[in-house]
Image (cartoon, rainbow, N blue to C red; front, side):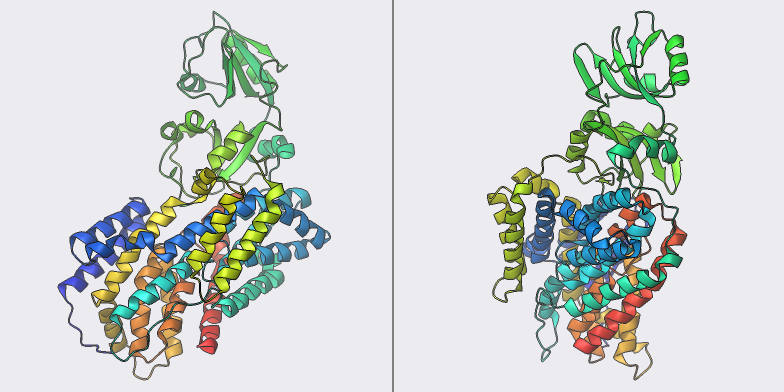
Length: 612
């Protein structure tokens, strides 16, 4: 490789965009998908990417693979496959805790080979909740091994996580900038990384099986099921008491007051429902007016509610005449939901989100970093990893969860399930996987064949398929892919690689460079997203390999795998989704995930060198 490349203006522009992306992702002042759009527009305005190629990321195989895996996962969930799995795991464990932990982690890890990591974590959170509710095992002992297995199991195939999904597109695009005489880089087959993924998954299972008792706490929060709601929320959040009805009289100061203003009154109990005229509803919007004859459905201690009723001229009734059906546990109740990093709720308070008006959800409390926030909860901006405590009708909760702005942890009665489509869904899924193994059909076409099959046979409805897609993830990936192309075509990747090699001691073995590259990628992915790290560093890795006479595919694969090597920080979506439900602290994550990160690095470098 020519290490005397001159730093051109195009290279400076590309490296400047990379630096801008890193800084913006690090400080999170602007949403990551907005940042990626700004980068895409800048690439077009500066001419670093040709206009006809600028939006090619949206039609790339990588993006199609992401969309397909999300929809296929939703189809399996809709048929009750995961509920069947929870029952099977309980039977196979025979009441032995260590065996249950091992089985759950192993099955979740294997499933993450064909369901993207984030989707797999979202699908398995309710499974974990159901298992802990039935066995008494705390979520803190179950979620970390399960999440680690999902992350490591994502290396079993080329569609298990976003970096591997991106890799083939980046390998193909790198051929345009390869020096003359260099071998053409070919896309990797569907299960090309299988030996690496198996080694990682086994290492994860062994790690927690033998060291889990020392690393995992027993004092995590319990799972929640509708039958256990009252005692659980009283113990965890101080949300306790009975349900009562308060009828507004003509003398009450609440007459003409909005629900939002009423909730600001001193000693106001939790307002969960309102009937005005003939209309009864849970989670009344804050702008709804209270009139003479309105009935309030409230929750709290009898003495406090009685005192509030007398002070405000309200007739108290302990018998639920108006809201009996609405408050039936099989119809409505309290739930917990964790906010993922891709949520549109982040940075916004409930007053702006209008959860009651838009979704029919009452926000009762926020569990943030093991601190329960209940005072003025309507005006607290929501953060990634927050645990929201909600009261709603179960069907409203299921409908709101389709937005993917939060993941419900509570095991609650779901919306429409199609268990009679289970065999059809599994058959379609198996066919799509067999097609993906074929060398004649691209993986994206094979997976989309499965999507089409599920839609045609009624396993999923089209609107459900749209709802299953995390459009923020898709948009982020599609907008950043051209940045990787620009790194290659401008020569910026070759320039950085050449100057990096110049500063290394002569005769350094390639495997040491591979370890350094793996650790650098891991650290890089903790600062920006794993997608961003892959797009920026794969071109650099390919040029590094050429400079030291290494295998470009092996170096690129090390980067793609290392981009997911994050068991510590919330920049990994799978990690951020479990910290709230399990009550993990930063210290817990570093103590448990730190050694796992080093084990991960050692395994991928060793196995890739044996393979290549």
